[in-house]
Length: 253
Image (cartoon, rainbow, N blue to C red; front, top):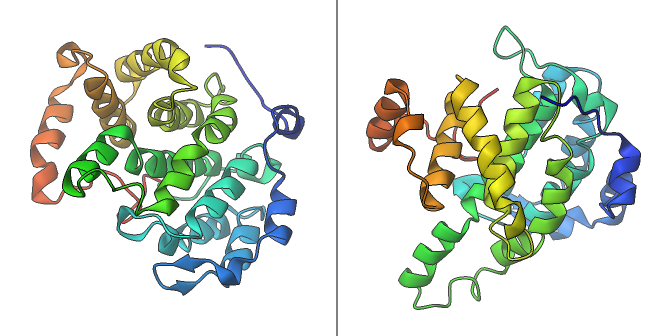
């Protein structure tokens, strides 16, 4: 696997937002979340760049009101853009304290973005359109805004598809898979499909495996040979309350 260490300059060259400008230039208090306005967000977002991984993980959990119930709010897109913008920040290279073996903060941020992308994927929208007689996205501008920005998020996430850290690399693959459903990104599907197959051949991460299998099935891949007995057991028990991802549940770090 090719080693890749993205730098902050990569984001500027790709036209991605600068995190400090986003933080200072956004009227957070005017944006709605599941629990009132977003006045608490600047402090939480700033803590993501501290050198203490325990503080960073708590800060990430404090963002739950912007994706509560797997839903999108006014603050969701600006927060997601900020997280995308700090992926190359040196502070995100720290290793978290949970579980004991450590989970990279950068991978946790990628998982967070990937969970949003999964909640806004084409399959979910198609279900919503059937239930709302074709007006789902018209009545859901917050999700539409996120979906419109999928190329921006892909540019941020794709920098890590060849990262030397396994957890970061896998998280980038899983985050990228639903993003490339955007019409401007479909040319990347074949490459990402190969990444997903490699992940499923090597990874034991339940979250990453579940996400990869879900997307490959939607894309029409036969995943039978890729599934382990643990994958099958997890799939069979999702309806019984076992965690299957999403911002409303415990994240995989």
